[in-house]
Image 1 (cartoon, rainbow, N blue to C red):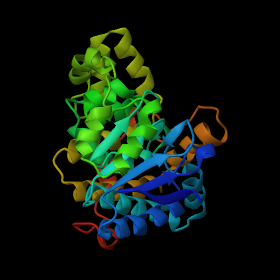
Image 2 (image 1 turned 135 degrees about the vertical axis):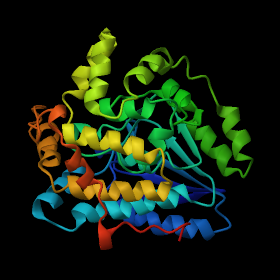
Image 3 (image 1 turned 180 degrees about the vertical axis):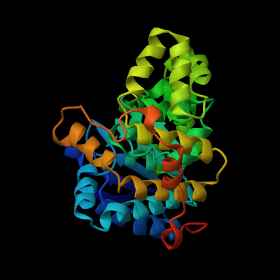
Length: 346
């Protein structure tokens, strides 16, 4: 099975089990996880949930992008239906009534962020690589990114979505994305201690180790100075004015991302900062529905995943060419198709 469920003492354990695909999330995995979590919410023998990824390389590298591409090209309902079900799962995790502990050991991106970051505890390791790189394939930093990213310190969230920056353990702890750092070699012992029905906070604190100095702290002032603007063009201007090696590198990175997706991501950061979780998920459903109908996603997947030439031709091709009115349309109401989420778990 692509996702496995078991009980280990007090722990309900979810194992994402597609190691050859870095445990990328499929629609069937979403559909399998949702009813099990709802059952565990009512099961008194399950005191908390632990989610982990199989294999040594990835917790979950994202969603099944190739399937989304193929559904979109074929005009299949799953192209947007996947997101509706995935966002409902993200909401279930966010509102889950019991402690939810994500062991984000290895690559954690996109959909893997959605099934981890909204839980009460996020445990990173020396192997964790965390990123929201969606603007590089013409999509948006979704799965609740509209909610949690603007709430990171300063403008770290904006920096992450516009550059696709990859964070390691020390930075994840510094930004508050991870709640604990535990070396990989200690994870099995940690899981057994969690299964023993002890105090979760005390157990996690006992395994907590020092992740070292966070590189983000050294560039935090530069991030906040350059990424506070409300347009990508103005952020690029601030980077140009900074005129440092770091700033020039960020400029080069931003300039290879989809201009439309970058503008969408920046709008998400600004709107999401003022919106509750359900509202943020609704924003994402509106945006992803519109982006799936535009050419950049298909061009991004072609360039990065299919042909692997890493030379996408975006529409429009430059950040200055993105019209504010076109971005407004991406965020407009879906009317009768608006995403509907309950207030609590089912």
